[in-house]
Length: 101
Length: 351
Image (cartoon, rainbow over all chains, first blue to last red; front, top):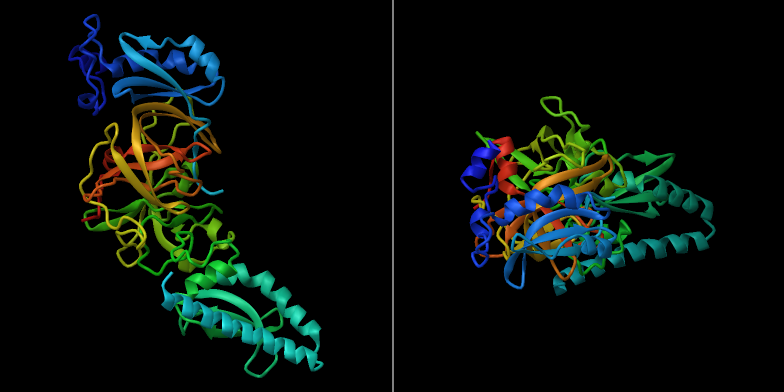
């Protein structure tokens, strides 16, 4: 199923239309979601990294890498650009389900 | 606060003050102070339980109609059932103080430290049908989250909230003999359960897989309710009635929510397609395709889980179901509302 979707250059995500690949980079055919999904497992294996997302940086789509600790070390290990897309490491702290107490 | 409400509040305080003056006077005349001390003990022991009851707004120490030391139970309106005639040998006298004062008195007497200017307290018991965006929970757990909204399918209406609010992180019973859900959640009644708080029965929940390789998409549960128990709008200080038409989150979208702890707050969608580990009491669960909302001031706090995320526009289109955040509350996570609605085959009751 996934491979079928990839053949058509679409990921299983409804927001594809909102985040188009950076056309300025002629070298890449990948969408930002594809790049995110390719690297997420490896990045989330880095101590302190809790997630990734698609966000905006200086008005352009970017890949966010979210951390709860060791942010400096994560920045050192994660490139600032992957396949033409900017990658921004952002500290958020632990994210928890929010019932009281 | 309006002058009218202030005047009514003052009137109630004067009444309560008069009772205390009366008590003091009688003590000075030689009536045993021990009797009042005993009333105070009984009051402290039973206040939380009494105040969990529908229509009870507070308690006080005073006199019975016969002039004996008694515990006063302050009522929203006459005819509140289930007030005992005596508690542990102390006589109980019910006094109707009225409804508008009730909210202020209740907050003050409940010791939540909220100023009386704050007219609406989403942690309080609300008259049925209850608004959306207020305190709720499972009747078997002393906790509190938020009612997202009213949803329906084929003429049956449901209260929507998170799995971790209604379904105890997969440990609840759903179906015909499912767990009861209450308004307010038991955390807001000092863990006291009152059958009058029930607004529905847990119908279904989406199990959460507690694993850092899982692909969870939603943290959601629905409870069968009724239009007599559940309305479709927030309290008056909220955004009102959401649209029944959902819309997809986009980067930069202005959004808002109304929840049990922080009421109405506004933020911006700053991330989509989020793949993120969320901490629960049962462990860590990885979620995919989530929405990130950020704000300069806290957008979400403990107890706001279950809040509906809607656009900050005239349409108030539902976008997400909030369920998690960081400790500062400036960073919140929501499921896509369409994923939630599709999972249960329901639509939002809105305008």
